[in-house]
Image (cartoon, rainbow, N blue to C red; front, side):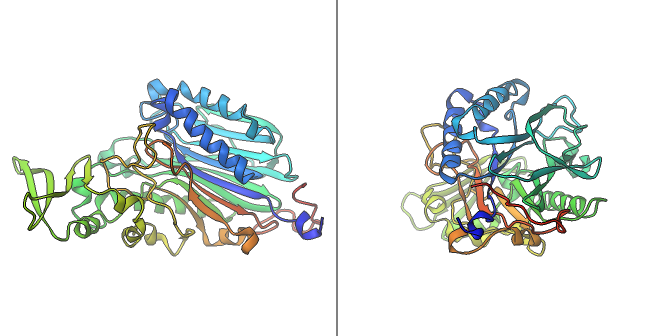
Length: 410
C-alpha cells in the first residue's frame, strides 16, 4: 500500500431527503425507501454519511411522528450501517413548541476506518471528540452541538408559522473543518400566483430566507469555514416562461367567477377538437406529456433561475437528473410526476466557493451528484446525493502544526 493510497481522504456521502411522504404511508413506503437508501450505502461504501431530512414525522406530524422511531430502528440495525461506530442524530420533533419547531432531521455516521473526527460545541466554542451513538430528539433547543433557527415570523407568507428553518453542525474530519447546513425553504402555495411573474412572490420569500441563512452562518461570532448547504430549497422553475414555452401554439382560456381566476386552460390552436395542452389551477399542473420532464428535461435548465441569484456565493455540480419533485406517492409508480406542480429541482446540494477545495478531483476521484431511487417510489421528493473524496487538512484546522497521522485506516 503506497503513501498516497494510505493518506487519501475519506469517501463522503451527503444526502438531501424530504421524507414527509414516507411517514404518511409507512407500511408501504418505508421499506422501499430504506431498501434504496441502504443499497446506495452498500454500493458507494462511504466513510462519512450526512443525511439531511425535512418534514420528519410527515405532513401530519401530530399523528405520524410515532413512526420516526420505527424508521430509526430499521436504519440503525441494518447490516449496512454496522461499520459506523460513531453516530450523531438531531431530530427536531417538538411540534408543540410552534415558535421553534422545524421538523428537520440531521443524521451523521462516521465509519470505524476514520481515525480523527470531532464535532463542534457551539456553546463552548471548541471541538469535542466523538465516540459511540448519540440521538437528540424531541425538543433539541438546548443541545450545544447544533445551531438551529426557525425563520423569523415575518418571513412566512401571511405571517403563518410553518416548519421552515435551518440546522447547522460543524465537523473536523481528517483535519478539514466544514459546516453542514440542513435547510427547508418556503413552497409555492398556488400555481396561479407562481405563473403571474418572475421572480414570483414565493421565489422572493425563498430568496430572503436563504440570504438570512447565509448571513447568519457567515457573520456570527464563530470562525468562518467552508460550508455545504443541502436540503429542500423548494426552488421552482420560472413557471411563467415554462408555460409560455409549453404552450407556444396554444390559446389561453381563463375560467373563474367573481373576478377571480380559478383555472387556466391552454388549448392547441388549429386542432379539430381543441386539444388541451396544459391545465393550471391552484394545485393542478396537468400537462398532456410527462416525457418533457422525465426524459427530455435538459431544456428546463434555462428556467432554473433561483440558484443563479446566489451564484456569487453558492455553487453546485452539474445536474444530470430529472427534477426531483413532485413524484407520485403511489408505491407502484417510480417515474411518474403528480399533476400538482410544475416539476422542479427542489432538492439541492450547494456549497460555498471555499468548500470546492475540499473535493478531490481527477478521474479516479470524480464526484458524483445524482438522484437516489430513480425507478422506485421514494415519496413526492427523490433524495439527492453527492459523493466525493474529502481532501484532508484543508480549510481551517486546529492541527496544522502537528505531524499528520494517517487519516483513514484501510
